[in-house]
Length: 126
Image 1 (cartoon, rainbow, N blue to C red):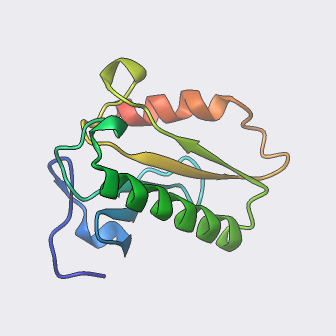
Image 2: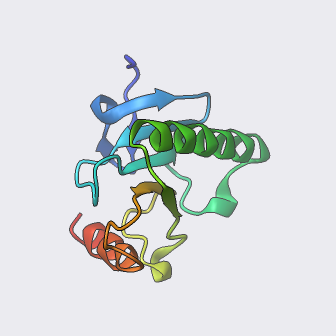
């Protein structure tokens, strides 16, 4: 995708990145809860919380979320999607770098709200 090294906090993730904009990227989750589970992350590694984004980064971040949302919905034929941000350590954020999970959902997938518990336990495995 790119010759530039891209980091998620201190982890080199360049090979997982499938989309990159000026301030944001999307990557394949190495431990997906379901097929199609991806992350959207700001390029700047010192962005811990959503409020730490500059106005320009915020616009780019939201545009990327919308673009990847539509892409995942189409490719995985999702009926719905979960978009999840754990904004700060007390919310369950285990990697100190802002990121949004995009998780495709299908009617009758059986996960219900338990997907949130699964998300927290996966984050703790890092």
